[in-house]
Amino acid sequence: MSEKRKVRWFLLVMVSILNVTVAGAQQRNEKLHQLFDNYYNERQQLFPTEATSAGDHRYDDLLPEYGAGPQVAVAGKFYRKYLEALKQVNRTALSTPDRISYDILKYILNTGQESLQLHLEYMPMNQFVSTPLELAEFGSGGGAQPFNTVKDYENWSKRMTAFMAWTDTAIANFNKGIRAGIVLPKALVVKMIPQMEELAESDIAKSIFYKPLSQFPASFTAAEQQRITTLYHQVITTSMIPAYRKLATYLKDTYLPAAQDHAGLSSLPGGNRIYQYYLRLYTTSPGLTPEKVYQTGLTEVARITGEMEVIKTKVGFKGSLADFFHYLRTDARFMPFKTLEQVLDAYRHINEKVQPGLTALFGHQPKTPFVIKRVEAYREASQGGPFYIKGNLQENMPAVFYVPVPDATKINVTFQGMEATFIHEAVPGHHFQISSQQENNDIPAFRRQPAFYAYFEGWALYCESLGEQLGCYTDPYQKMGALNMEIHRAVRLVTDVAIHTGKMTREEAIAYMMQHESISEPVATAEVERYMAMPGQALSYKTGELKIKALRDKFAAKLGSKFSLKDFHDALLGYGDMPLNVLEDYMNSWAQSYSEK
Image 1: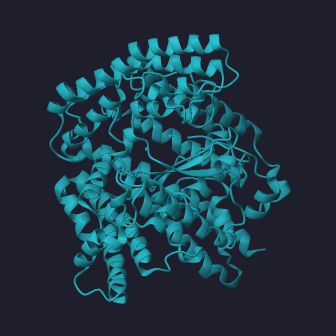
Image 2: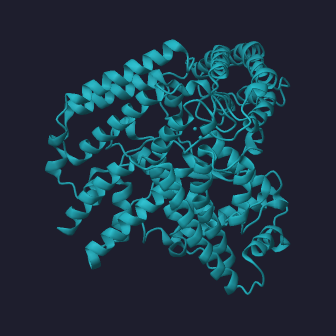
Image 3: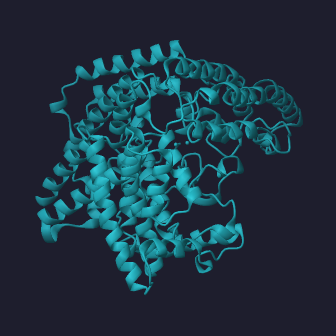
């Protein structure tokens, strides 16, 4: 999987939401918060593209050679330094918010330290997540990299210049992976090559990296514009384009022949250990095993399939569920769009539909605006569906709900679950959670950007279950679309584990998806290849959603008539994202305090 933003949340809101007394708020441990600030500032310099995405522009000119030996050594020293510093803090004496932040930082440091032992740098990029793709977003002029001042333009020229060194390091690490037998699947490499070739475009009219030259701020003088234009032509032609061409050629001629034929990690040396790491990273659930995740997936698939059978009967469809899936995928009534704008307007209409129901479910709503846009052409083909990119309120940068529309006539309103997708990716899913976290200045700076997939993806999937309360799913076909989205996440528990433990091949995983949900083969293929590229990430959705639902149901039973879903949601979002075990401890404390009101 880009990042940013912040604006103040009044302490009074936090007090009412979290039942924190003024005296308790004054118990903030200043020594610990200085440690948090030091960690944040040092991390931003160590990972400057992360800083840019978070809206911190002190290091916009830097692009370290991620995965290079010296950089890995510095990162290891960094993690050890702050783990030692945390040991000097008496955790039991901390207030609730400080204890949460302490636990989160410890988790981040331990996870980072573990990652360095697995040589993940041997696979430095894939078709979904990579520095080359991130730089394309930055260089477009519409991403996190600012282009407001002459210094901004100069910063980006320095970052572009550094891309060749990054490329050489990435190739060196790919080669180390080849020698160690730790390589990507061929099916992924063939998707990366055209991405690099497209980004190596030299035509000024077509290259994304020339776009900032067509949108100079009005304050720039003619001389400044000419100087920057000359500088960019030089840097793009001598650094960026050659680097992308070098990557494309290397991937095609050297790496592809050495890539593995299997789909998952189990076929690689140490692959099972790597998968266990990713499973813990993305589920934040210590003790959770691949087999337990797999069995949970089978149970959820069976449950949701039963609900789909009910919908099929309700609409009077005669035939099997597989026949119903085929009908939903292929009947013209479910593909009403002719143009891109019609697709985007349909999502805008859903946004209008959910607005009235939000006040009953949330006491706090974020201030960061968001917009609906089509995905950029260079990455549209590899995107399985719409997705969210967070905004930045401080910089007046709206969040974006990106919609891939390679062909409007093939956008299916039902099997793509447009209402559920919007609720998940935009409002109130990712947008409410991520924007509220970024706007909350009452949590340490290092925690204002989302970091824990099981929490923020679990939250977004949980929000899909609020559809009826938000005025959606009134049409049984849209409800079927919501169920199709839910079973999609349940199927992931099965296929992700199966791919990476050797239970299924790529082709078997694609067939399993098509058997259990209404999905086209191209979309199923893109999804399976996503699981291959990002092991364990797909497990986060259902794992987090099931935990949130379990907490909600437990507190509703415990509190009875005192339970308020709105207060539960506000409390859940009040301290930002966190590992699920930290969340459970915090919410148990919240429920105890809430019951004593």
